[in-house]
Image (tube, rainbow, N blue to C red; front, side, top):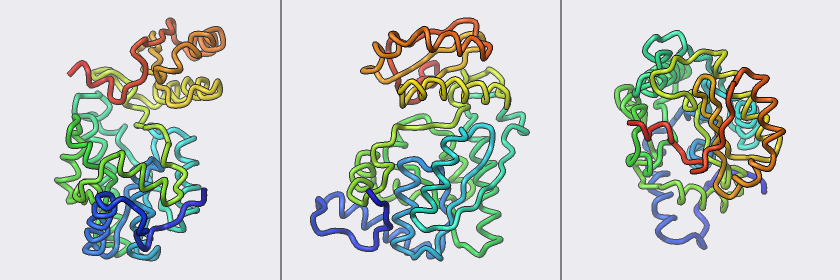
Length: 280
């Protein structure tokens, strides 16, 4: 597949999906020039391509927050995606780890993170003459614990996908039709989401999580999570890969213990997004 901006909605698209995508495009037109909070994930990649096709690439700036909570693999993929879509990419160094309210890892950790990154993107937009910062939050995000949305509201960040009623399933379907390689990309969240609330977040801890997940990815366990419970690495993989993970235990346990984990456990519930919120 070759990714491309969407300048016109194909006639063969389902009417309900086409209608929601067009509402999103109308929202973008009203904003004129936008900075897209870009991560290279399913939602922000779709939003970036849609904005480029609707407003023109010169009126769109992709901005990615770079910090220890962003895996290097994800960073590299995002850079390549922005280049393919044909939009300028700005890499913004964030400082959430310097905020005690973030590093202590409270339940509203994402609020502190988004206040940092959205604040920096708002300053970038003002400096570069863009009219708004837009985020890839979608309609499904209203049904989960998302303190980062509150930060966006306070900083006037616009959520065009959410405003248009586009769900994750809609975005994947439209992304596939547009030829975006992210249409079937597994869900991804920042590395800090692997640390239980109340346990301190450090650059070293995030680096260990990144290395542990890279080991699993190298074994073909895509879409996995390594939840860092201090001495314990609790591994989540998609339910249909649990047997594969168990069969590869000798190639998992040793390398993860070398990273400093005393115990390595496989979660029999399998991967579920936001599993750390189960304690709330």
